[in-house]
Amino acid sequence: MTLSHNPATDPSPKWGVTLPLPGLTIDRHRFLVERLPDLGYTDVWSAEGGGTDAFTPLAAVAAWSSSLRIGTGIVPVHTRGPAVLAQTAATLAQLAPGRFLFGLGASVPAHVTDINGIPFDEPFKRTRDVLRFVTRALRGEYVAGDFDTFSISGYRLPHPPADPVKVILGALRPGMLRLGFTEGDGAITNLLFPEDVPKILDAVGPQPPGKELVVKVFVCPTEDTDYAHRATRPFLAWILNREPYRKFHAWLGHGELLRESHERWAEGDTDGAQKALPDEVVDGLFISGSPEECRERILRYHRPGVTTIQLYVSLPPEVFVSRARVLDTLTRLGPAAAR
Figure 1 (tube, helix red, strand yellow):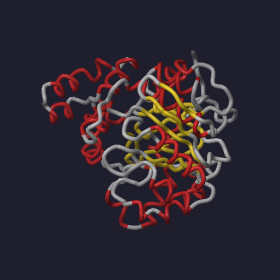
Figure 2 (spheres, one colour):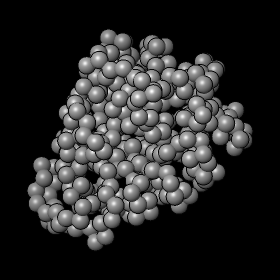
Figure 3 (cartoon, helix red, strand yellow):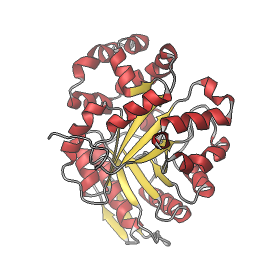
Figure 4 (cartoon, one colour):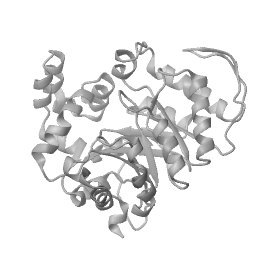
């Protein structure tokens, strides 16, 4: 499939930012949330691993803004029961009617087993089963019976959302991507090069109207390349050596590019695995440069079919000296810069 991007005819994607920003606790974000719509941002997304949970930041955003969409990107399907997930989604939907996107996913064993003591069993089936349960529960249906990975004796939400909640999946490879678009409302993908987006779109196939394809882009807006590499290389070495991401990049055709890092990681040589990551990988998967340079590279992810650009922004320390610097950087980085 050959894809071309024509800004004059292709609909503009929504732009979101992941909060909290690294280095800034959620209670210090109200000034930013209140200004984001003026800066052209439409969404706030959360992430969940070993730090902030996915839901509390979005509850705060819903209290601080009446217009921003809020989305979880993503909530692991193993670490909460299906009914708890449905209840929490319904509660957030009450705070932000028609503006909540519920992103679910398998996550990685490090976030499920290593720090929560929960087996990372049958991630695809578990994600599919939770998706099926949650979508039915959020519609107000009574759900009972056996799923492949759990059984429910009977559950119905007492107050299902009045406005539909889109349930989307964190997805890296064809099976999960197709599941997100056939049984859910779309998918979120991340940690890929712009040139990889067409392969994602090929795997998705024709997109019915209203489905979401969210691309999460990691950004470190600084012209200090040495700092950017020091700040981002440890994370990239860690995540790219998790099994789901190893398989993802092998499917994308980057196995040889990452081979040495994988080998050193398997030997227990964490530092060696970091050093073995080629600069083209570090620069390509965690964009750095001036905000304007970063923005130009972010725009390469905008292809027909991509509905939302979700930014994970790691700001250098000098930006945190004032709220004005934070706002200025996000302005220059985001959609309002073209106005």
